[in-house]
Image (cartoon, rainbow, N blue to C red):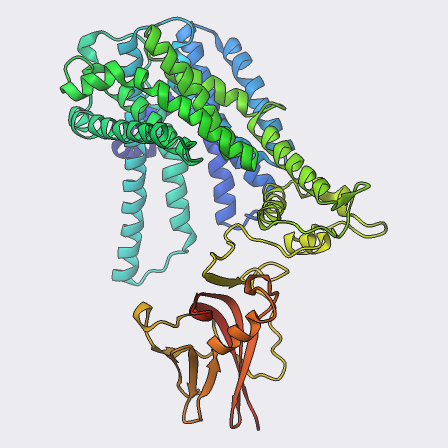
Amino acid sequence: MSMLKKLSFLFPVGGLKETAKRFPLSAACVAVLFAVVFAVIHDLIDDDEEFFGRIAVLSVCGYFWFGAAKLLAESKGWDHAKYLAAGIPVFAGMGAIIFMSPQWGLHLIYIIPALLLAVVVAGYVIKNNDDLSFWFFNRMTWFGVAMAYIAGIVMAGGLSLALLSVHYLFDLKFDEKIYGDIWSFSCILLGPLYALSWVPKKFSFVKEECNDPPGLAFMVNWIAAPLVAIYMLILYAYFVKILVVGELPKGHLSYMVSGFGAAGVLTYLFSWPLRETGTPLLRFVHRFFFPALLIPVAMQFLAIGVRIGEYGITEQRYLVALSAVWFAIVAVAFTIKKPPIKFIPATLAVLMALASFGPWGGVSVSGNSQFHRLEKLLTQYEILQGGKIVKTQKEIPFADRQNISSIIDYLNQTKRDEWLRPWLEKPGETWMFPGSYKITEEMGFEYVGPYFQLPQENQFSYNNYGGRNGGNPGIDVRGFDYVLDSQYVYLRPENGASKWEMKWPAQDDIRMPEIEASVEGQVLIVKVGGAMPLRFDVGGYVAKEMETGKLHEKTELQMEAQSGGLRGRIVFYSINGEMKEGKPEVTNMSFRLLIGVDP
């Protein structure tokens, strides 16, 4: 028996061969992706090299796009030349974005959904408005995708367990990289090809062929439809509250409406064959979901508008706004006159595709929005003068200091720090992004992180997790022998343990005495072996510091204690508490402890 026949006994090799012939460019893309992953596993290329990461991502995009282009060509009866003419230019455009844009990863937020939706509608563009055929074609396709990956996972898991069994039973050792080869082959090469083999070769089906998968009726009748109805009632109850109280909708409402809209649309599409035979609640969803979506969409526009007005546009907010536009389009369309159901994914595919590139796209609009917000704030507080950053002499409110810090973080994290270069670069110096803490310091204020909050009137807090240079604040260890791991401590016994064991840093072949900590009121007690304990009066220290200024404005807080030949220093990362009868009471704190032993 030939090797091909042996493989055919285990896997549909002949079917996969036919699939590769039907979708040659998609097959080539997954082959390239597998080659890149194989090379990374075997250290043939550096996995930190971004170039190969871009090749891998472009291969994924090509797999979906060339699959969609092939379905379009088949449905229209195009020859191979027209198929290439439709597929290659778009693939080249995606390659230009992925290889030329520093923000290429952000573009994928829009590109990947657009490609998946293109696969859904490609075989039914312009003509072929048979809803049942459209539904069944996608039911077969995506059910096949699920089955393909289940098969891939089972295969990879089974082979891995077999090798582990051989290793355990016969003490045979295998290179660990073989497991990576097995999983990458199963999930990156075999799985995608097997998924394509499930794609139907025709686009029109008669009613008798269009069976729904087992379990679908139960899922949509008794799970999906009730959840959509419950969510609808919750949203409408909130809208009534808005009218009664007269308050603007909360910014996060837009995300809730997006969730409700997505759940309703998916339920509508999945249950299409059951729209007339399902439970009364499912039939209600099919009849009234889109009219009922109109008011939530209006509120979504208002909520995301409030959010954008306060914090500008980001890629995520652009996506939410885009979803609101899509919901509005389909809600109006299906309320006035029900178009073919392919209209639902097709409109979203077009919107996502348009949002993935160009000056109107999500990445460009978001970056420009945040940069102009920063420029406006810096100009308002006279930090940006003559095109350069200078120390401000003005008092900047906490909220604006936090906004400035947040935008600088955003520009750095999205690889737009070069945009700040003209403002910060000094003649004769090599440009390197100095970090958000250093930049805000040059602006004349302390960096304010996204989770920092001004304490309430009866509360106080201090936070220095980031330090001035990012990461944990630097610690001066001179004069001390040991630096213990970070500690988080409650000073109220009802909130946590009042006594616990602390861990020494790793010391090879050295037996260290036990170190135990406990809390008595506002005092932290540290006992090392049989030595006299170190007592840190945290409450007293905080009270003294608060006499000289607000705690959250302090740049560094640390206190020391000594007992006999033992010295200790606490470097605080955070302190939180509340005022009681005019005196501070610390509720919790985090810190590192330094221990020094005198000779």
